Amino acid sequence: MSAFNAIGADREVERDEYTPGIEPQATWCPGCGDFGVLKALKGAMADLGRDPEEVLLVTGIGCSGKLSSYFDSYGFHSIHGRSLPIARAAKLANPDLEVVAAGGDGDGYGIGGNHFMHTARENHDMTYIVFNNEIFGLTKGQTSPTSPKGHKSKTQPHGSAKSPIRPLTTALTSGATYVARTAAVNPNQAQEILVEAIEHDGFSHIDFLTQCPTWNKDAKQYVPYIDVQQNDDYDFDVSDRRDAAEMMQKTESALYEGEVLTGRFYHEADRPSYGQEKRDLGEMPDEPLAERYHEDDYEWERSYDLLGPHK
Ligand SMILES: Cc1ncc(C[n+]2csc(CCOP(=O)(O)OP(=O)(O)O)c2C)c(N)n1
Ligand code: SF4
Ligand SMILES: [Mg+2]
Figure 1 (spheres, rainbow, N blue to C red):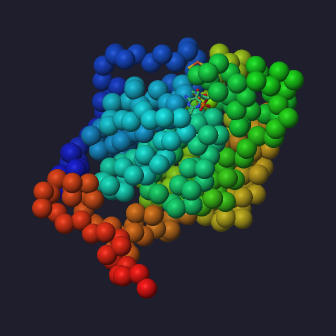
Figure 2 (spheres, rainbow, N blue to C red; figure 1 turned 135 degrees about the horizontal axis):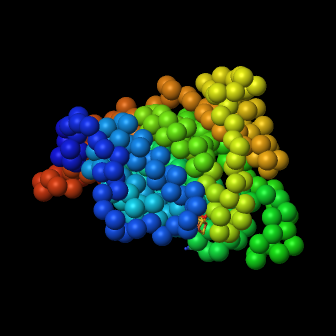
Figure 3 (cartoon, rainbow, N blue to C red; figure 1 turned 135 degrees about the vertical axis):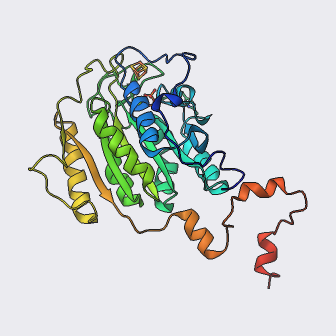
């Protein structure tokens, strides 16, 4: 156990340790799907026996970004679209931390889309939850990258001419090693998927469907849902890229035709994470890099010195 792994002892963790007090009370609107993410995440952490002091939750900006204010682990409420680079740095500096990043569809698939793609490509060991309510919630309902084509809002009063992004396919083709979709209306499945995603050693992406009854009036938009692992109509191998890609295409098209498919779509168990690759190369120490900042006489190497003189 390192100095940065604050607790590390095995013990029973209660889900409500993650929401101990009544302050601050969540300011999400009644019926908001974001409550479902909070419930599933604290349940998953309790199932895994993760002590709140072993967990870092980094969020972006949006209604979704408020999650870190209501979840009593280490937290970092960052800036719009930038949760992933912050989460990456924290995980590299202290691999003992359980790192979760979270934000909205605008945050993660719009302004932060570049970070999403590259964090997946590099297979950073963390879980990324994208609250997908198909709009910008916090700023009052503008069209987002997941809004359906034709969606009318203050920014697109004649209806959006854009086709929505395909988040699952984007994650897969970028290099994510665990990809799933769940929904706030299905908290049991959401909790199980979160447990798997957090346990996975690599980049886990969860497209989490969250209804926004305030700006996306149809609060029932994700009901009924189908769990593809529980339904005989869907038979595919989650460890097979081609199978996963076909299933994702089907799932992403179906959503806008009113059929909500959820479940695990891809799981590649044996690809090493970026941190592991760096440690194998000898570029990163086995002990948390962050500890070096506490060693007064530590002699820092410069990459220039490692490469030798320029020719
Ligand atoms: C750099 C920057 N640009 C724009 C904004 C304004 N802004 C705040 S939240 C947000 C979008 C929120 O939508 P989403 O990420 O989907 O989260 P939700 O509120 O739906 O959970 C925008 C555009 C900002 N805070 N920072
Ligand atoms: S505006 Fe929508 S996303 Fe934001 S808290 Fe209210 S219901 Fe939730
Ligand atoms: Mg949103």
